[in-house]
Length: 88
Image 1 (cartoon, rainbow, N blue to C red):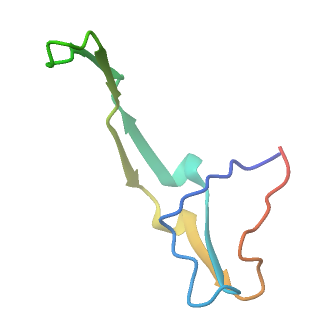
Image 2 (cartoon, rainbow, N blue to C red):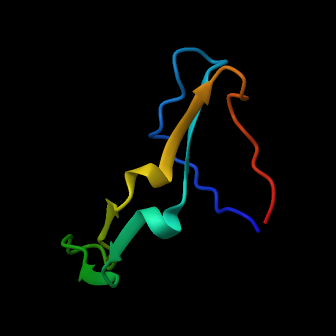
């Protein structure tokens, strides 16, 4: 049994380089994810001398925490600044 690991630079590291912070959660029961199908837009460049085409792909995703107790923040100086996660 393994856990999925996601890295996000928006989680603050902490007050000093030896201080780290990470979030542990059970996303299967605590998180509700809504996602729309991808939207693809194609349009030509507006400059007459250019024959390039722009392709824009976007997708809207919304998250909602269902059970706040399914998540916790672990922080302190006992963990490496960049933890390495192993396992499947």
